[in-house]
Image (cartoon, rainbow, N blue to C red):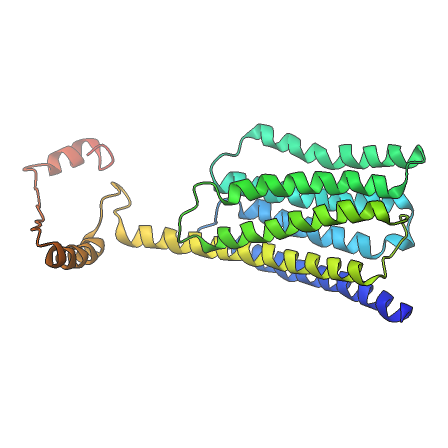
Length: 280
């Protein structure tokens, strides 16, 4: 039974790596599109760090403690930092000062390393990492809901996934006080397996929601390009045709008349020829 549960842990961790690889490849493909969703480059880096973190956690027993801390948990912190970067870019609130958040990874790892040298229990060390991850997840969660449109179901899915992530981190933070663990503890109890499965679902949910966000953004961008004039932003003939159908239906229901006016300025071609179309 012990060997069976131990195998399950390694299988779940390997599954996390495979999920991360697939999602990273999928996001790298979206970078080749003509129109690239704001934030997708940061999200690509986030998935890459998720994959690296899962890999180092899988092989942590083969290397010294500091390798697992820096390679595994450090990469996971960077993953959530870049996830936050992506939403900052997507919501147009990103600034150059945000890059300082990258320092959270080395600062946290150094702090945990200092606690390890001081003889503090590994449970306390892990709680520091869990706290940082939870804070970063909450920061991304607030941005997923910021000025969200009802049609943006991808951001809503990401928000619910982050709620699951925060809940998982909080539960792990609390229950870890009741366990005697070391850096090389695998965690073979049933509750730990459930926790790892929830973590796998969270990773899958984050990647799927990000892919949905990029697809919905691209769909909206293509709709704007197909319905508005690129120079002035005025609705084109295709958009006006659809608008008149809507107005006609509304007019029938409300008995309110509507009209469409077309205005032509005489000799305006001279302005365009003299000063150019942008000025015109």
